[in-house]
Length: 563
Image (cartoon, rainbow, N blue to C red; front, side):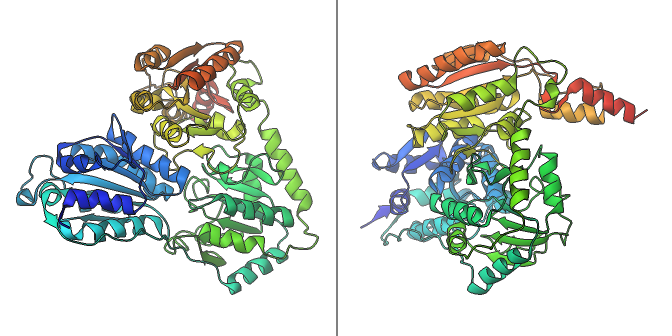
């Protein structure tokens, strides 16, 4: 049967099990949009900016375990989408992005919106290619999904020349992709148990992509059987339920100093899944480069990641389910000497969640610690928390207790603007879930337009906007490096609650702590009844820049250090 390249492409997406596509339409792939009109089993989510498309595709993949799919137009559309592709690369998220391209007859002329995508996306993807012939569409699409989901997952970009989409070909469909992951050997598992049996101060550090609910359960069984302390890598706090007694905190930005010391003092670190990048290692200070003082067992899906920065005593290339299933079968260590240390580390974590030191002298009108505490007491344990980047996210990372797998959507790449699209995607994919987005004022306005996407798709997340009138993280660093010299970090903001109402949602303003409870109740009632988003604008004291410090204190310290 003769089919156009566009029809072949859509048929291959169906063969690969695609049921959601996130896009901003463009003339460069009009033929594909036409073919999608007949694909009733694929939900086409139309975004208001291409960053929303790739952020949502990333969130979809993290929630479902299946590659996220996005379509964007050539040139400006592709460049707008790049932030989400970079996020997927650093987060090891499987994603396939299709980008329109100029017709073959115009290539290499710097035609309208022409870009060489191999050069543009090469450093931030697993594979970039261009489908020049319609008869090769099944081959390219199958390979894209296979590459994106196997080994260390990541994004793939396929360019679609306009003339190829109109070509016809008679070719068979490809089969659905089958993700491939390595498994640990018996020798490696035996070596791990032997190292654990010789340890006095072990620490388990989990992170990365590829975890499943059964894998997390197997991890829990192994940790509990051996009374091991478990910490989660930066923005991977939902891999081990924070209410469980062996969870001891997160290893990332704003780490509990006592936990940081435990990482340094450990004689064995079993790192399962994380890349051991800058954020998780405290700027490569918690572990020495290239040979850590601690014995390091590093388990990762990508063989290229093992030994990349740190030389482990034992390197294991394995998928998370494959490795965790072997852990669950491992014979426990008898009478481990670290049981009391695990209990002490847990007590330190719980103390770290208490009232923060910034409130030791005075409590502002709006106490953010009480805000998060009220959320913890009010919302379900499986509430999904999404956020972008900024100091505001510290309030969630430190004081919220993440529940089971896929209760956290946050970019390890530190992408501002991620939270709103991720929260909207979560409510589209799982409308029954309670979804809350933490966003700073600067962070929110980078992708606020996706509230229109939420209304259009009857998706109803709750968005909390922390409004302190500045790019807070940059201002904090500014005061440390150049005290009392504010430049480029002040913001004049809109009325966020009214903005949410303009989009078709509900908006509330909270300026005092006692106003938050009633506002939250009204916002939740709205999201459940109206099926449109609700936003609570938290008008924060700009002085409270982190749970540990005020701007004035940071400035004063910097001025003293500079004489």
